[in-house]
Length: 84
Image 1 (tube, rainbow, N blue to C red):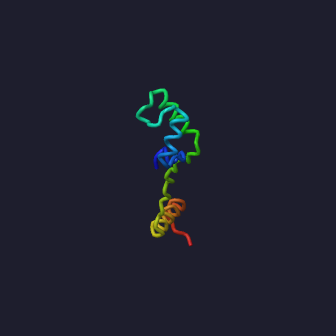
Image 2: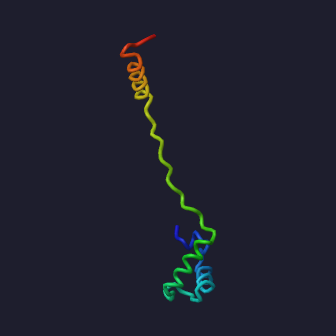
Image 3: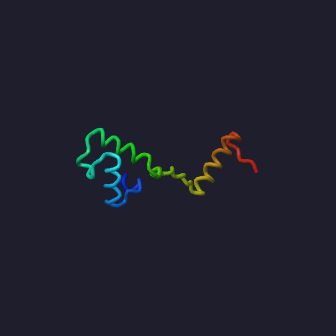
């Protein structure tokens, strides 16, 4: 999603009115460097949603592997002897 849409400036009319209010121009091609910085800063203060981050996936260990790991731990704990 673009910064304009995130800021609620989803129509051309809204975007141009925003540019006119902040920088006094109706097109971004007419912005000076200082005006562009002011527009970017003003967009940051609008109702933008934070970007979602991808959650780390939890690795699922198959049950057979979990069983083998458990048996291995049990053998190490009991010096290689299986107890009932």
